[in-house]
Length: 316
Image (cartoon, rainbow, N blue to C red; front, side):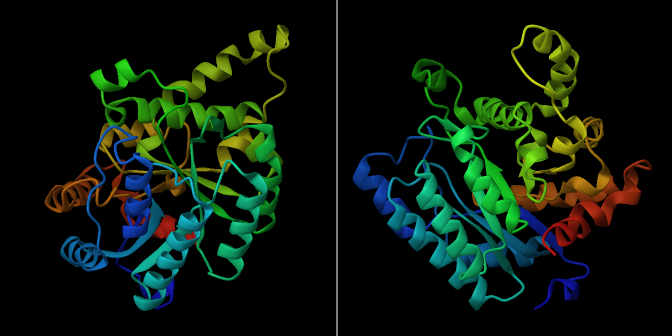
């Protein structure tokens, strides 16, 4: 089914595929609890059942954290996501995982996924084994993705290095994931990655993390840092123009208004974080979003944009 035919259905840009091969590989490596909490169970039938209940027409699948160690597991996951998309036309899209930190292997997988599997974009972790987005060695990968006008969906992974004591006290998902996302995006901004590779579009998860606070601070301190030769020129307009934001997590009218201080209404997208949140909670959350996007006068004009139009335009 073509996207244009999905006129009134919600489009969810933040959902995860968790395959048996992925889980088995993590179990073999003793990494099932690497992110500090257990992986939820996933199957397509349950996902579709929730989508039908909640009124979600299309979900974009991305591989969950942590990053697989094996390129073979990454390939198998991408093949499985492509199969799900093929067998459920109009209901699923996917952004392919890459076998980083091996940049050349990641480039080969990106080309295969986009050109052969017809992936709808690429999923990138905030860091893989300490290789953070914004690192210079990733420039060749971004050049390839820019040539293909790729959509990139970001997702936080456990920071590297990580303070295990702090992680045990406050689980990653409660706070550090927001810091990790902000860290990766600001790294890209400070090196003008998105300005230098202008044909990629990047979806930032979880309501923009701390970027509505971080961006003004970065801007205010840039002259001081430049005077001390710690950063160069930053093309704020071009970098920020490449960023889109999903509304997974603690969305609210207040949160959306804060996000609109650093972006425009055409860059906000609905996201669920399925299956990490209980289906009934997601259904209630989407219903609440629809309600306040109807009731709040300043946000009501953007209701359909946030729920599906912006995502359709991004993935056109």
